Length: 452
Figure 1: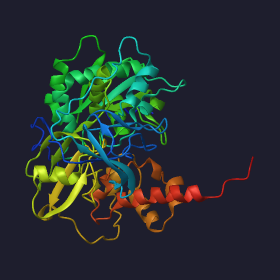
Figure 2: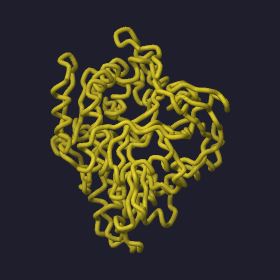
Figure 3: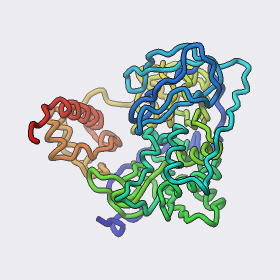
Figure 4: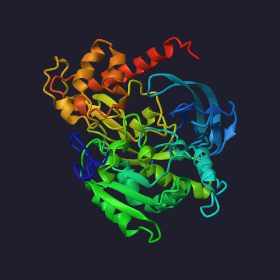
């Protein structure tokens, strides 16, 4: 269905929460100091956890492989520092579950240089070799989803990639990571585009940027190589425009079908910071050991955009940047789709795009959940035209099959727009997240059909 005429440069519905980006969008990326210990969970991407290949007491170099990919939908993990493996044990993760983790104590006087690996040549590498190199580098989506990038880029034989869309939207309030990457790592972005074009066969590239990052759009336009078929498209500010399905509608007027994938409409989308990492790592054959993270929020004293080694303990991060005495909530990611931290003994992972800290005076939420008044605000806000009110009622009655089969629950990507606008303070997105998990568990426990 072509919606370009009706929804030019945007998509249906959506919301406009306060952006709160001004405190960090002008701050350059700075290198974060090294901690006294690193704790690296092997389960920090979607798919199978990586498998540990080092032993306790072993010395490792920064960038060295410490856990290998366990399957096709998996990526390896590389050491963020040169040091000694002190322990391999179960560690807490953001999801609340435990994961096998590697504890590394850095060498105190090491320069922490990263050795050169085997470069991946642009001109002679096949698409398969580039995809393999992206997996070997441990690259996942850095926008927060942490889905293995090589899997996303694989174009099946019966599909064709007509457009490669680089997602520089960053519509989450507070976060400015991608903004700073576009301003400071433009050359890496364009190198990454060349690898992506080779891997996907895409003849056309669009870099999509929201209007509140006009300086980034101007910069990328100014340094754009003349031989690349790249269009830089500035779109209006609206949440959740960073979702790939919403973005495809906004810039191309194409709508991904329910249950479908972007390739069903000839598109592959890649986060802009992920593209920069591809351009930064593949020419040197290195693995990813660090990423840019926005650290901000009213309760943070030294706000900024920091290049932080993966595995850095959250407590060390907060101690370094300084926090108010009365912190009430800590989020990994943005306030809309991020996750509230219940344990400060977790670590920075590849999927950590932001760390937000709020004091008790900054949290103004009603403790009382009122009945739905059927105002329709959630329906007007939902970007995929679901009925969150009806889904919320069904969730209370645990009617999970009906939610999925009759009201398309699985099309919800948990953007939080419905919860944000609900005057009754109903935590709709939490209901939907729990309902999906219970539906999947219920479905997995159903007896298998005996039909041949």
